Amino acid sequence: MTGGYTFTRIERYVLFQVLKALGVSLAVIAGLVMLIDFVEVSRSVSRYADLGAARLFGLTLMKSPAVILQLLPFVFLFGTLAAFVGLNRRSELVAMRAAGVSAWRFVFPAGVAALIIGVLTVTTLHPLAASLDGGYERERARIRGGTGGAEQSAIWLREGDDNRQIVIRADSRNRATGRLNDVSFFIYTVGQDGARSFSERIDADTATLSSGSWRLTDARGASVGQQARAYASLDLPSSIADDDAFNQFADPDSTPFWSLPPQIARIEAAGFSATEHRLKFQQLLATPLMFAAMSILAAAFSLRLMRLGDLARMSVAAVILGFAFFFINQFTAALGAAEAIPPFLAAWLPPILTALSAFTLLFYTEDG
Image 1 (cartoon, rainbow, N blue to C red):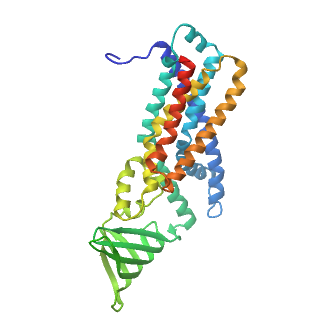
Image 2 (cartoon, one colour; image 1 turned 180 degrees about the vertical axis):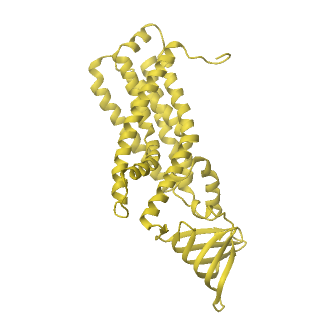
Image 3 (cartoon, rainbow, N blue to C red; image 1 turned 180 degrees about the horizontal axis):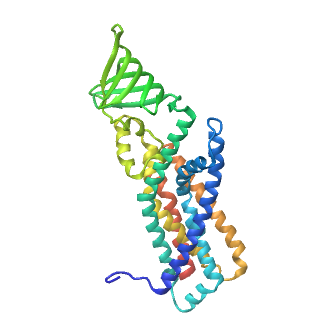
């Protein structure tokens, strides 16, 4: 690479070993996840439909990628650890260090590879996995609800602007047509001071969102202090697009990375809290740093393995480290979701702590 940094032959060899180990680690974890998901999918849908093995496997392929992506930090931890332990067992790291090659030279490729893979994961793989996960949830709901695809659980929506807010409640929704059944609209006016006051309630048998308005059938409405009125059909203007009505409050884990910023804006514009979506967005932004930190930590940890007798202790320490990461990450995520700490801090604290630990151990190992 002219005018830039070029990997040496040793660094390319280490990078190849790391990528190979990462592939094996990913295959093992993905296989376990898919096996568990296959059993779970079989159990969850068997009460509603008799599906063949091929159909169940297809649903598993839709569900598993999102779970696998959540476990990718463990892939980098154990994959990089396995690669450097293998280099140590073959005395290749000892030979490199004896030849005067700094540990930074063969740890650097692992960190860079993890960083690049992290960026690709967030920008490409996560949107694909989120789309598949959303498709799985829709397909599972269709199977459970029959051919009509009806959702029996209550649905709550909210929309509005600076002058008016509408809270919408429906008993069920038909996924095939997007129609809400037994729906109520609670309309509030917003004063200049931001205070909301109830102005009108409208009940309808059905409501369908189309072309920027709600079409209500068999509606009954009443404003404050006035008698109720009946409408065969009634149109109410809406500020949300057809797809946004139900997607803007979707599970953050089923929302693609590129769709999170506009969804956050829509949720907050509708008056809801977007804390969980903000937390998910920040976690995705921190993903490349986490992958790189886990790889560097695993590599730095393995540099201390200079004798084969330390292998068992090393493996146990790596497992403990993995569970410690999982606990810290889940704990800070829970604090962020509960708004005990800002989403930015909840998302970035675990990878920053991991990176600081990795560099501290590497400095201590290499420079004393």
